Amino acid sequence: MLKKVSCILLSAAVITMGCSTHSAKVNYAEFKSDINIKAGPWDGQELGSVSGSQGGFIWSDCTDSARGAIEKMIAETKEMGGNAVGNIRWRARGTSEASCKKGWGWFGLPVFVLTPLFMSSAVDGLAYKIAPAGAKKLGLLMLPTNEMEKAAFIDTVISL
Image (tube, rainbow, N blue to C red; front, side):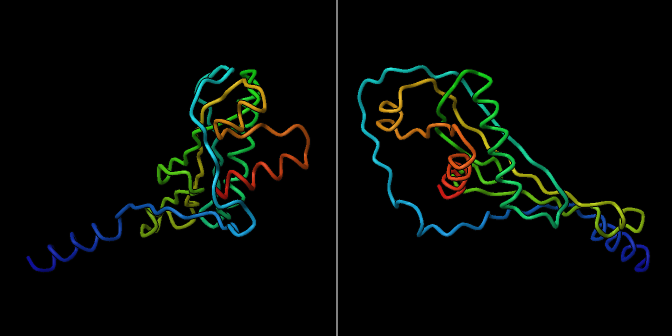
């Protein structure tokens, strides 16, 4: 009986699934510590929700996946006719801190040893069509227009 119970407990421990979240690594000293947001009327239009996600193997770099997710969010915003994005949240933690979720399940079963474990980074935001002055007033981020601006935009979103 004891042998049967211990086998069941061992099996349950081996088959346990789990996940964890990880932060993208950014040097926050490079960015402004505060963003001024002023209330009041604004001339623009909220277009709706946008998102982006990037997956990979569990050993993939979270920062690289976060960058890929942001690129997809930029593309979706542009497809909607938007030129700015705001209210950015990362799904893994539900905050503005760039993060990834890593799935650690099934690692103990011999059948699944060669099956890759997965990591994902997903970001959500709101798309806007607004003049640059209005975007600055509301604390929105204007979409990049070239590759250099794109790199700076992605670094800014990861550093929020």
